[in-house]
Length: 173
Image: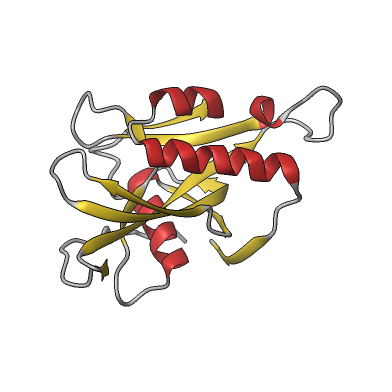
């Protein structure tokens, strides 16, 4: 059975904190090779999925979007990742919260990022006609990502993977 995912639209249900729109997203990732192999570090084994920005020539980023009133923060992060990047997986514990200014206007946002261990890559997804997706090394993603706060989240993911076994949270699809 194939499930059809439809992107949400509109901002009637968007969450705000002191006037700042709250956005949530994921850093979709996969590990290649044996993490315990001698000489293999996390930078060698970690691949992250980035997506193209909606506006051509504006770089790449991790999937993110508005957190709506009728969903948990993890469910919103997973929904945005499915809509924009077309991947499913396990949403892990939050990497952090950032306040940042929009690149398109002077609006301030509150952003939350989660790692997503990818289990499945969909052949078709809601934003496939407006976005491309690319698997990159963590270092290449940091080089190309347009948002400093997303690069910081990626650094935190790399540190987390280097330092401890991961603990998955509740959302797996």
